[in-house]
Length: 369
Ligand code: CTP
Image: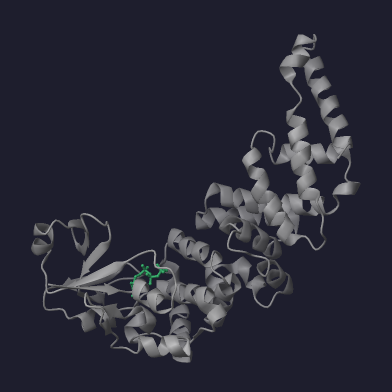
């Protein structure tokens, strides 16, 4: 059997990018031989094995045939006579269809190196269109490599448009769509993801509210402030503010959007809390003590202090001025936590009187911020 490094690891090594995941292709082997050599099969009907020591994925060279809708509707044919070139030909982009042998030789039958040099995201073959997930993947790769000058090759964009003109995108699961969007948001140029989907006529279908982001100055101003340490949920929350800006309607729509996509709860909460908090933080100094306290209670910040740092980050991204309102909010919460109901009880407060005294002291503290 021959073993080759394939896919993203080869691409990123050539781009001098850090390589996190290594995928391998095994040519000339049967499942029985793999098991005999200590590899663990991933599933009964899928020709992928896990290396006993490294935990990396080793897939038997395979061809595939579309047999249903969506990205999982495929029949695989893996056998020792499938060649490396055949395996590489079923892959999405030429830059993802290169392999490296154990002696370090690069195998590049579809022009991946040339496309790396000319910075083109180009499909390998018409079979690209069989997997609708690739529309999202290409947009995500564009978001990752845009700063290097990569663009989607015109014929590939045409295929993406053709996929978007059928009902194929509707067969992708919401989880998978969110997974791609979440990864795209963490890339260097997240707005490129939405721009490319728009060019492919897929944005409206996949993320209707996010059509607003295309050619949007505010979105560009926000994204320009992202750094390597800006968390994905913070990026999402700040961009959502641009897409959903009328509060009451947006609250329900944004909530529904996040639930539809099955985002994590904290991602959904942060996006909604940003929508609620940002306008109030903008005019913090003119808010009444009662309004400040109401905001803190609405967002449950005293019991959920972990909500504060991401909220400060998302609202800072949105702010046009150099306001320190987020910091004041955090300091205020800290002070409010200093009110000790037990001490008040020791002083003789109980029942309704205890509640009233706490509220009085909370307002008094809010007056100071
Ligand atoms: N692949 C494909 N079509 C897909 C998914 C994957 O052709 N829908 C192929 C590509 O050759 C890809 C490889 O499988 O390079 C591995 O896929 P994956 O690990 O998802 O992506 P990477 O290319 O490794 O990229 P990333 O850095 O985002 O993990």
